[in-house]
Length: 200
Image (cartoon, rainbow, N blue to C red; front, side, top):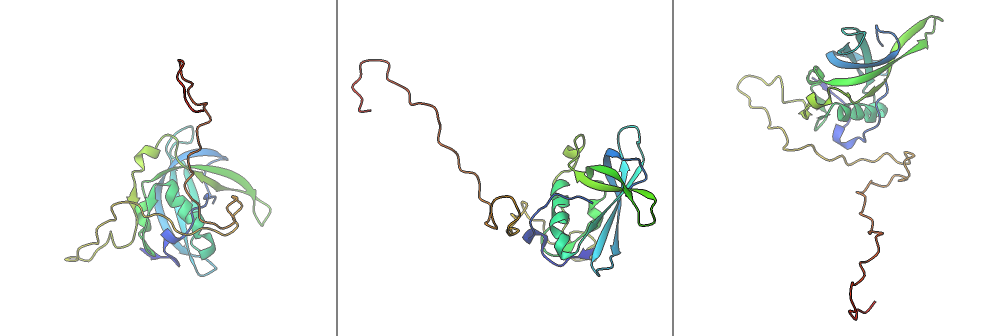
């Protein structure tokens, strides 16, 4: 279990971008293992080892990384949303991400030494396996509970996010998003079909 710097429900969800032993392309994958590594910034980094589950490179391996630096938490939140996972509080049980499905785009890039490498550049919702990603609470405390101690019950439903990234370019200029209001019908009013004397 790991702890992040903020309650993930207080973090806006951004599109997760993010290496791989497969050639460049887009792959349907399942998360095979998750390892927590300490980044140079001092914050944890998740290393996701994924297996290709469909296509020509079936069984191939793709590695994707997700920083848990406070500035990168919105991307982590986006990853959780994409995997149909949620958490409450700061403690996250990263092992519960194993077995979740997603789609990954692998691209070629230039390494510092001039050689070429491949990396997972973007992650998307799985097209063919998303239905297998049933909603899952990955909050810490729901797993690895000491014997004789009852785990707190999972929330009845996913809590709503409360934070908004100021000036995030989506036109809301930092205002909280509100549900779209229904537009009035543009259809003309029905006309009477007789000689009724109606005031309009």
